[in-house]
Length: 315
Image (cartoon, rainbow, N blue to C red; front, top):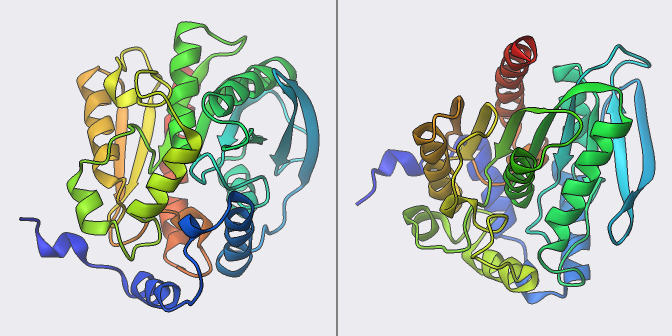
């Protein structure tokens, strides 16, 4: 039996969900991937805030293991001394999402953290199933370490990108890049391929991310559960850098995120855990549709900035 108060949606979240759940038409998992990608882009245009002012936004392509990888570099200063830089991996179930769907969030992170942010447009499934995405993310992160003037890396991403954050951090823990990873910030990450969680049962319908869409994503991505990059929850976490892990209170992925935070603490990793209560998966891209998300974003990035400052000082 779960406590009813944990299911309380904030007023703006409840209004957004009512609007969303009243929409006619096919569900994402009833569409081909290209249709679902377009649906995600359109939702972002409607429900996210504009990018806002920022000194520098630069699109580039970099060499990857299977051809070029697109990246987008954000910086709120036209030029700066080398310091920490963030590498950001977008969400979207490894199937949807791109540089544009997470554009406003990356600009906000660059402003609030006062550091360069490099967003990575990794290959998507089903055209490029597992492990194409983590391979691209590792390659792009090594490229940033070698080519962006920085002293250390902060890895971050949401949902599937939260998984890729942890996967890349584990890879670089065991085979380091030319610059150290000094902190990671997984936001409502997917950390296992199984769905036997109370939060799946409580929030698997009607809360934006559904059990059906997670199954659709998983079938397209075709991850190997015996691989640490697919299911980091089942592999040792010792030696990961200081971590700020966020979950959303009304998210099917909430309980696996909580379990991973507990695993980090058990492993002796300096861990800060925050739960955005009363809100849903995906809120970092919904700051216009759910205005309270702006406070969640600001609050988390303020904490991350302190973690990075401390880690940078120690480094």
